[in-house]
Image (cartoon, rainbow, N blue to C red; front, side):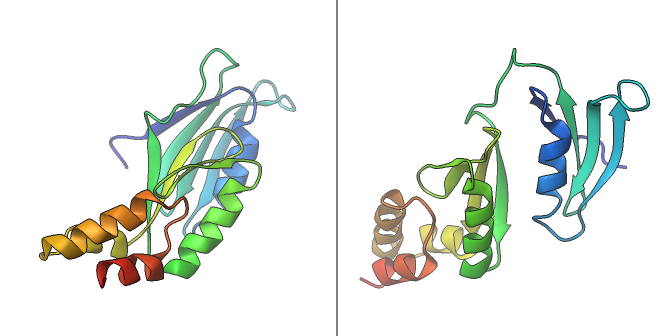
Length: 151
């Protein structure tokens, strides 16, 4: 059992969001839906993404998501970045440096594994060129980062 679980507050879209999120990653599923009454709307949804457990509450409109918390996804390659970016920005919005908000306002960082490697390159000039390239991006483009790092 996971000791610490991320708890997400939605207005009334917890079940819809959980169903969508579980389509994005392997080893993902809706574990349980607690409803108000037998046929009532979902009150709480327990789900797993890539084996990590989350709880989603339909708590009403009092609180909304901010960029103060985000879900960081380390992607294997550009294809995974492109696929997740397209699906998560549908109805949402792009931000800077690999950040986006999905249609429910939850912030995500869709980051290729290669990005932190380039940003921490032992040659400071290569790392700085990669940083400058990243700062001009919304969705991270690995080839553009490589090209920038190589000068």
